[in-house]
Image (cartoon, rainbow, N blue to C red; front, side, top):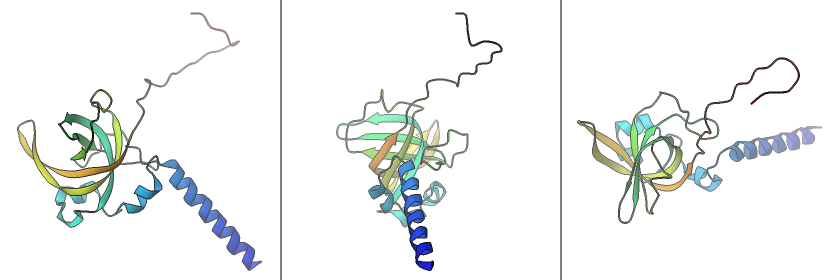
Length: 167
């Protein structure tokens, strides 16, 4: 009986691990490399401790800057949910930059799109938000997921009677 409990527990643990990984669009290989101790709050205090390590962050694209050999996204950090999707709330711990070593079309990677990024922490870069000097944590992208844009507000329908309607 004890053996059956052990086998059952292992099967259940394996199934749960699969389900948790299956919910995220980030590959399990990349997620294994992520240091869970790296948070936006810690990066805002300084990146030196985490340089060379891999972070998982997400948020809302503020700006897409295309350069000759790379594209840099400025992202407003947002908390991630259980699927690693940014929660489009007003809760943010700051902004960060992600450098991609390829061309990303600004029409697709556009302002207000939600994105989740796995990147290597490489340091900081100075910039401005309006007239304020700002120190951005800088990551080089190892992987990213651009989330689908919503199709609009959820439709609300209410009706009484037989299922017909008039246009």
